[in-house]
Length: 294
Image (cartoon, rainbow, N blue to C red; front, top):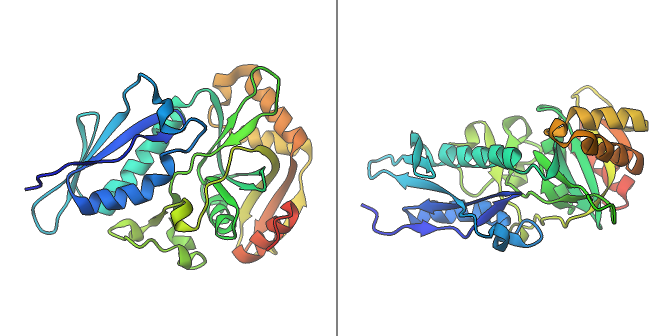
């Protein structure tokens, strides 16, 4: 029987605040390392939770062998008898889902995002387009990580400054098809996660830094094609606008302000499509484009 409960600090996924309670030190150490980048992921950090209590996840480990994990959220059971890797992957998925639902003040994009010397690079794309793989490759090359799944644009409601991208540094999700080209990102802890995806932690302790809030300067629309020649092709402002609108998660809820923000993005950013078959070649092209070197 476990006689101690371990609790993470308050974690922030955009406007969604939460803690994770674990009844074992091994599980707590793994979860804390994976989610530590969310402790202070935005201006104000976790202290900005204010009077609202954070949501609470629980991971309870069985005493049987092999051990399994039961998962709860806010006192309600949501999963039982799971491998640790599966339980943690579900937790990350649920946090991502609720961050998307509850972060209404941001214009959200289904995209990757990185930061290079204070300039944001937005990588919108559907699942399977290579956006997470390209984002991971650019972070590995030294760019700051914003997100690989849900990029948040903070709108300048007062009109006194530019819109900016803000970090939501969830663990990077690497699908099995990219294990080979990102083998150096193999997590130290694998327990069920390696069947279909890895969850790769980010932050100073990992060598994969979290980017700063930044004004967007580039839009790169990836398309992985194993037979394609890796190349960047400029997009018109109109093409960029419709691509960004297609991948905006909550455009309708922002009304005209959302469309105007996408118009500003399309007009301000240098936008390109990127067909690629070679990750290293694709990263080299993007790094050269943004002036980040190799």
